[in-house]
Amino acid sequence: MVEVVSVLAAFVLVLGFLVWAARRVRRRAGGGSLMNPFDEIWHPTAYHARLEAEARDELAVPAPLPGDDPPVRTRWRAVPPDPQGRSTPR
Image 1 (tube, rainbow, N blue to C red):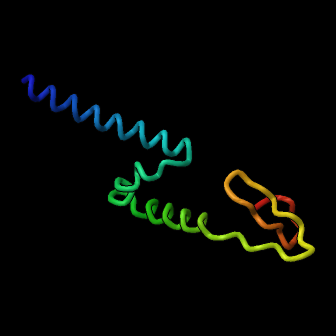
Image 2: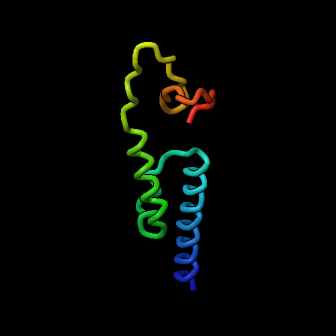
Image 3: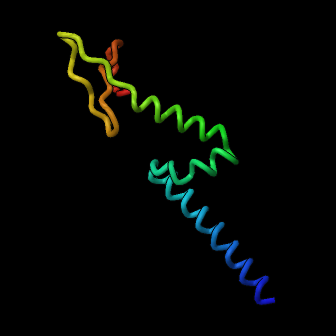
């Protein structure tokens, strides 16, 4: 009986840790490396979307041409000015 209770307690602790880790990662919008193996197994579309977002973030920002406005700074990367004149960053 003690063995069954200890196995169930360990199982509940592991599941509780995974739930806590998933909430923390999604709330802070980072630390994807912690959840990547689990997303790759149980939610492959989220895993592939995260890989594409990371690849897009690593792309170089094109150099401004002479006479262009300075780029708008966002929290993560510089965004070149919008050619249609909209003031919100993409």
